Image 1 (cartoon, rainbow, N blue to C red):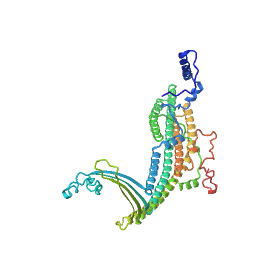
Image 2 (image 1 turned 180 degrees about the horizontal axis):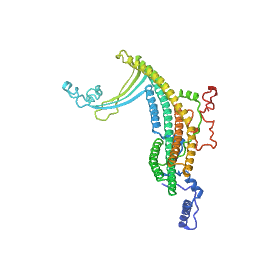
Image 3 (image 1 turned 90 degrees about the vertical axis):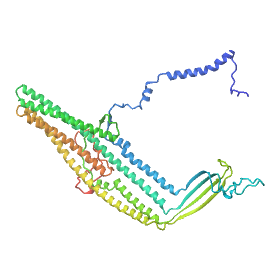
Image 4 (image 1 turned 90 degrees about the horizontal axis):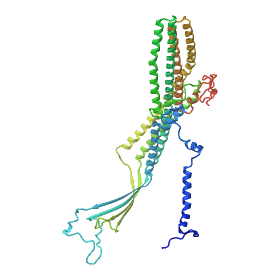
Length: 527
């Protein structure tokens, strides 16, 4: 065998065979050298920075900057509660496939082998079993392939069954499965809204705890500064020993409050980490502060949204499912019909392994089943399904009433919080002014240490009351947004990083009624 000829011939060089080998090897060596040099050549700085750009700059020990919207998004994307409902929806999808399978042909194959050890046909007539071939005339024995008493039996069969009429059970089952999938979608919406509310409340609770820690820290610094002033006055003979002891005791009593506030803040952050699926030891930096713009809401529009809650839609879908269950139960009174076919092959070899000779056994048929009497079971199933319809209707009516009551309660909390915030902010300003006057009077010797202490405690309590009012306000907004189905955002548009300089509220907030809520309905707008 000759080797294939090259496509191109190179004329021989004058250097002989060694020169020819060097000439053929030189291009490959040059190419390899060029590739190595290119690999070792330093890349431009811009290219290196561009390649390193997609890598996250946040290390595992860096704190996570978390806004309110980011916390809600993380919980909705990775929350276990949402994943459970999603798995239920996937399960409903598979149930639809299972129900649809009842309308499709059912095909199954079978292959069996039987070894007969002893048979009643062994001793018939007291003679040995007939040989498979007639030794006299060479003709086949007509009884050789009969199944009676054969030592080896192989049977292969293919069964086909097709439902012709099932009294509507398959179509009704598909409708029920499809309604269950729709119901689970409504439940998914409800779960997402409830989880969003929990995350908002946990986030603001963590911010509220941080505010309490800061208030306690400022109170401790103020008490420590006042103690130093009283001690200075004591050295000048302007304060008594009782004044010094009172100031020191008050300063020391504030230290346990800081410890309690820090513990509460730590637990609040752990709860927030749990909801947003962060490790327990990961540091959090909460960006959104507890500062909200004050604005009224369009009450009529929000009440109308309560009637469109996914929970009510799911309850209505449950009623339809129960009605379909009645139809499915009544189908038990009607007959069913199906067609079937059996394609079989049998072999009775003398040895274990089957031979090429197989005998065919085919059959087709139709089966009709007519219910005559089943002990009143179908009647009981129909009545049970009708009871399910009445129960679902009552549950929907009860849910409607509970949602309206929940809306009224959330609206009452909103009105209470809205009316308290301005009053408590004014109280803080008055308490700050009272403390300034008390310090001046104490420095002039016209006020006692007790008056100074009371002024400081009043300021601390006023600040706590103001933060509590803000927390109640945002929680009331979250409750209103939840009970109305979340169609109109009420929390996020009102939360701000810092208050406007003029202190005026915005009038472009969703769900805001620019007119008084006592005006007519035509003056109310929902943006």
